[in-house]
Image (tube, rainbow, N blue to C red):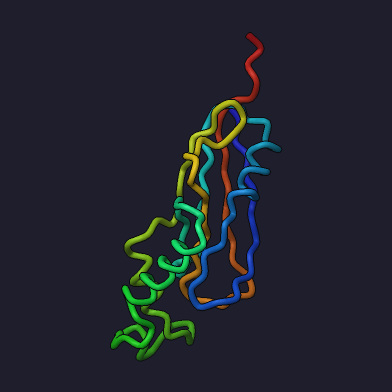
Length: 146
């Protein structure tokens, strides 16, 4: 059994933004040499999330619209009266209550097991931010020597 880790560093440019990180995760899985196991993609922030969903331009716009409506930035939130980090970002934390901070994806034959339409997204909820981190961890076995 092997365990390997890698960090993806991102910069975001919008208040709410979806970034497809599938290719970066795929490259890590391939480079790991793990043939069968699990890869976990974890967000290191309370105002950003990880999600597996469909990558389609109109759907992505719908997702952004939905998130903005779900918890409006200008809502009447106590957290925004005296934020600990100077950011009035209660809406970001509230949206995060309903999203995953990580996703675990099976790995078989050296590749992530994703459906035809599935992609792995980093979802910024409180941008723009100069630096965001995503931690990748893969656990499993390399080639069997049958």
